[in-house]
Length: 299
Image 1 (spheres, rainbow, N blue to C red):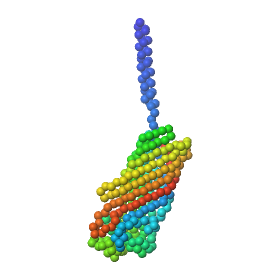
Image 2: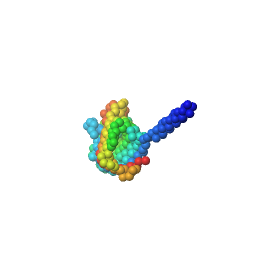
Image 3: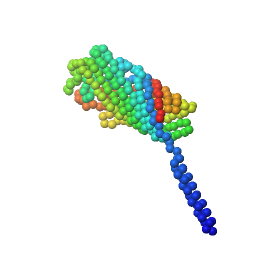
Image 4: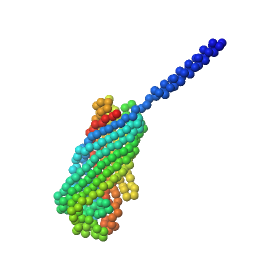
């Protein structure tokens, strides 16, 4: 009897040890989704269209000044861009990208006179004079992505983030200053050689959708679309950012992609100027469309 009890106790002890070992083994070998860092460097061929509202000093009405047609800024450029992303797992990620669009041009004899508000000051630019124009735009995008729907070869996600535009507008030439109490026509009488500029930082939040589909081993179609509109105090703005392309896996770590990007932004800042001068607020309408080529590395 004692022998039977001993054997039974030993069996229970062995079963407990085995169960504990199995539980520990399950805990240790539970799958952990790997994280991934992606760095991408490339360039895009941009066909730009930029303009701003200005005032006609003779008629007193506002009109849209075209930077490419009226001020000779280059319309087509090949420009760099950089992207980085960190995927915590298959569903959660953060991303950052940056584009640079810097342009400068000179017109020896301006054909269209206009008045513009920069840094709370009204400036008068007459026709017939030399004018050098600078328009520098840097666009940074930072955000979070969540894949809410996944399949064997596709992902669909929602993104929340912010586009921040760093804008520098500058004019160099014979420029008059509108003093307090002067009319629109009187401003033109004080034109002297001068350089005027304004630098603006415009953060615009965005919400969007993105997705990718592996249509063939090593080849993916991916796209994103982002939009936002804001009107708050002295700032009003909207943006549209759409991209679609194909990515090819060269090796496990190296990938190449070709895409097409459309970007449009409208930013308007109100200035505090004299009530006697009905001059358009500082604003910028900007869009570009064109192909993008890049190479990326994952680790």
